[in-house]
Amino acid sequence: MSESAEVHALDPEAFEERVHSFQFWFEAVQGYLTDREYGHRPDAQDAELPESDRDRLVTVLCNYCIGETAALDGASGLVAVAPNRLTKIFLSTQVVDEGRHLEVLRHRLVELGVERPEEEIERRASPRLRDFRQRLEALVAERDWDAAIFAQNVILEAMEFSTFHMHTQYADPVTREVLVGIIKDERRHIGFGETELGRRLKHHPTLRDRLRRVRSELDPLVLATFEDAMEEIQVPRGERAELGRSYLGAVERLGVRT
Amino acid sequence: MADFLSGYSIQYWLESCPQGYLEDTEYGHAAGVGEPELVLADGLLREQAIKVTTQLVVGERCALAASSGLINAAPDEAAKRFLATQTLDEARHVEIFTQRLYDLGVGKGDLESTLREHANPNLVKFAETMLEKVDAKDFIPGVVGQNIILEGMAFSVFEMMHAANQKLNPKFGQTLSGTIADERRHVGFGENYIGALIKQHPEKKAEIEKMQKEMSYYMLATFADQFSGDENRAELDEMRKKAREAAGDGAPEGQWQGRNLADLDPEQMEGLLSNTVIGEFKTRLGRIGIDYQTPVRP
Image (cartoon, rainbow over all chains, first blue to last red; front, side, top):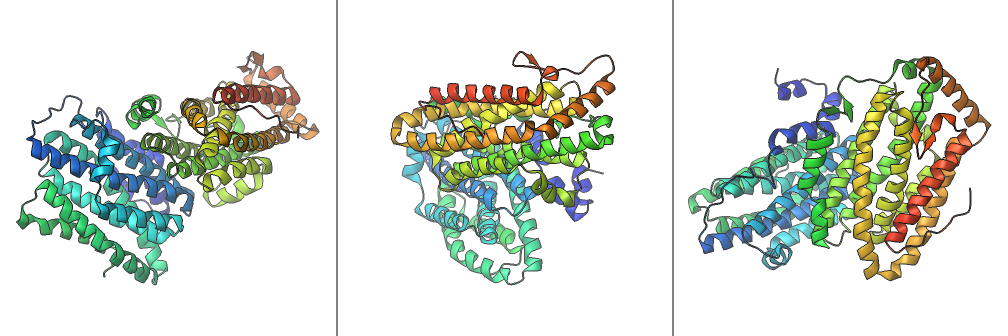
């Protein structure tokens, strides 16, 4: 039986004990982070990018850094709000994942010739993404576990997952390797959000309405952010609807429809 | 500041920790190594192991709350990333010491009640004093409390416990060894980084010294609870007797700070631990420009 099948054969309590553990995270990342330096193979060859493409990529990566900083602040703030030891430990693994994403994306900016990444990130940050970040911070500060986990581990993670997945199809080889590693982490984070909220929705059916309101507040920001990102990545017009579909599919798996 | 912090990157952490000294471990020790039969079979030794491990879980839960809570308050992105690695280190410590409680026979449903029953109230107050600063997003006192006071205490306690356990209980010794390696990194970060911040914010010194004095008081009170009194003395004598019988000719011993721990009575052990930790506090606080404040003796 494969490791994944073995895990899914466990009873619900043992399943959570296993998949929310440091040990599980440790074994998972060993599979795809060993021999990587700042998210890619040390000998990966950088492609020569025309200046306009490089500049667009820098803008995209700066905005990814904003998203990852929001995710880092959100996940770390949620450790204190988490209802039990297992959710605290899972979120701690997510904190280091988000910190790693921020680090590898920032490092990629340096590889692309950006001398002061912090200043560049500040300069190129999308106002919509900043707005999203502020709303997520507010939910965490209110210690609203359900709404904050929904915003963080479903909406934000699904937004990042869909964008990064789309970007890998158009990215230069080094950026693609960095994004592929991040996507693997995002899958774990979305899985946690869905499992945690799925269980709570079963016991608290009225929660769905509250999550719907959170979603209607955040969806416009997500969709507008997609537009900005697709423009910079230069996704062909005919393929842009796919990004929205991918995001909506992930969010609606929980049955939270607007 | 950011250049100095590049030595605390996640890349470095991945290479030194998950891909370094933790490789091939399970819950902090080599696979297949268990608690000694003597500890599991003897009521007194098992109970003592549960009590001691409870204090470790309480301390590590506090460290997890502090390191994660400080990320939002950190003044720059490099510090956030270091604290992210520390958050996961602390979560790992919570996990491995919780696992030890399970290995000692604590039922999963009894975990929280076991912790409530055995948690030392002075250790809880020690944690609360620091977490007040973290909850208020007061970064400089929070990080001094976490990375110098709490980590400094934990470092010496773990080293002493490691010396006492590495022969008698290799599994626990291995678990402590990985934890000590983490704590060493955390303490180093606190000193280098905070010294520079305090220079920029000298107005914070009085508040930090007040917090340090309170935390030191509760720490010394915790040590006194663990070592002083006739009951502790009688228990330690009994445990040593059992350990000697189990060890046969090779009497168990552990050298720490130039002393053989097996030769010390409980008060001497308390004195050695307190003096070591306070000595370290004085040195480390001095390096960041803070004067150690002596608390009332509990």
